[in-house]
Amino acid sequence: MIALLLTLGACKSTKSVTGGEVDSKLSAKNIINAHYSNQPKFKTLRGRVKIDYANGDDSQGVNVSLRMEKDKVIWMSAPLGVVKAHITPNKVSFYNKLQNEYFDGDFSYLSELLGTELDFEKVQNLILGNAVLDLRKDKFNTEVYNGNYQLKPKNAQELFKILFQLEPKNFKIASQEISQPEKARQLQARYTYQDISGNVLPEDVKITAEEAGGLTTIDLNFRNLELNKPISFPYEVPRGYNKITLK
Figure 1: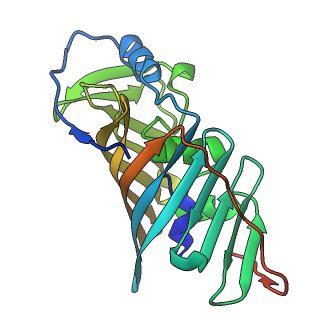
Figure 2 (figure 1 turned 60 degrees about the vertical axis):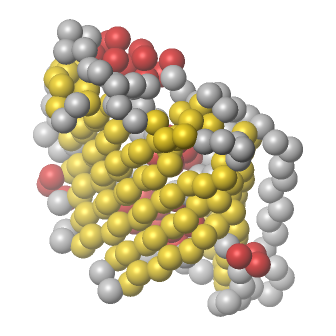
Figure 3 (figure 1 turned 180 degrees about the vertical axis):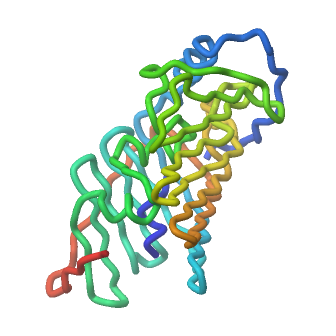
């Protein structure tokens, strides 16, 4: 159920977004500007997410309801409210009715789980198909790779490496990778997209996190997405639950 901490959330008709011709002459600056010009524009989002989580011998699958107010709240609920999660820029919180316990803390556990420093903005970007890091703050070399635009920093860092691929049709992230070779850590996310009311949003996201030989995979499938509907975020930890510490 910890995978609940990593998610997002219809139109009567949706369609998958595919294909597009690359332009090998397009500069890195133009590619990056196009990426930020094509950010999804909405205030609220709701829908359902099918989550498949695997870590070694531990694997789980669950369908959750998702509600989101952009830049403010990500809310998720498993069937019958057995598990609920509430994420804001200030904290991560969830409770589990089956175990009578709850967690209330910062983003350090999510960061440890995925092997890279995370905050609310990065989690939101990760699940919306936006670049996790601000591409406008660095200079990149670009090349065409597997039909996508591939961006690598011109000034590569020894301890922290990043790689982005953007699909040519809408300049959304096709894959993004952050690694720390010295700590044997790597986080990769790969995307396919759908069109929701003129907004390009993820349809499937496959997140892979490796650290010191351990492998965690989280597959997200977004369904029945609706934008800008009135929604609420009911969340209150039941009385008498035990607070847990995650390590």
